[in-house]
Every structure is written in structure tokens, then in C-alpha cells.
Length: 152
Image (tube, rainbow, N blue to C red; front, side, top):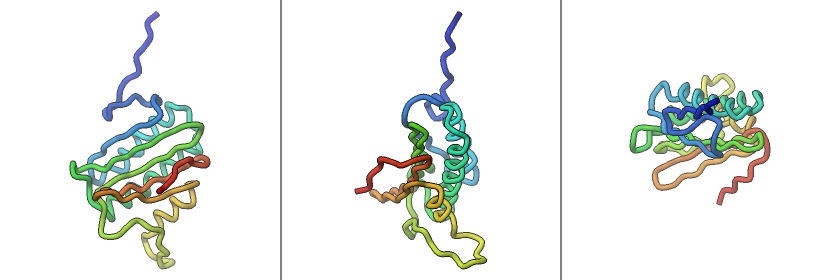
């Protein structure tokens, strides 16, 4: 009987293995779908509860959409999606080249067609935040339980 070697994905990792994963996804209209596909595939390979996968997928959708709408790509024309999963807690982050404003929860007009993304993230995540460092902006969120992440 031969043991099968798990197959590496196009981002250099094996779904469900390792504590931390990163994918550099090309900037553009397909980035949200691609980010969701790679992260959800990984979380399912880890047997993460479906409710947590659903919440991570929604949070990730909002973070990528905000990046595409309000920021610019990283220098290599990508966004960086980074996630860590342990004990039914997932921390996900999206990094980009930043924009003219810092990511913040806004109070949109009641009938405004947009402006609720970070409110959705805040409602699903136990913690979330923004880190700005040398032209890179990272928005992160912890879903599924309390995070040990500390912002300094």
C-alpha cells in the first residue's frame, strides 16, 4: 500500500497543512472569488466547522472588495491574503498598497448602495484592525473565537 502525497496548490502550500498560509492574488475583478476559493478549500481540508468557514468567507469577501475599491495593489500587482487557523479560530488578513484614506467603519446614509463592508466585518469578527507599514495597509480579522493577536 502506497501513501499518497498531498498535492500542493498554485500558491505553494498544501490545503489543510501548516498553521499559516499566504497567497498573493493578482489584483483585479477575480481577486475576491480566487481569495475565497483558496481559503475555503484550505479551511475545509482542516475540517473547520462550516459556520466558521461561512463567516470567514464573508469577512474575506468584504476585505478584498474594500481593497479593490479603495486602495491600490502591492508593488507586484497583487493583494496578499494571509490566514492562520487553529482550534476553530481563523485570523485572515488582506494587504494592499493603501489608498487615499485609512480603512475605518463608516456610518453610511440609510439608502447608500455601499459603505457597510467594515461594519459587516466588525459584526462577524471577534477582533479586527488595521496595520499601516511603509506603503502597505493590512486589514485583519479574527473569526471563530477570541484572538491572541495584539496591536502595538
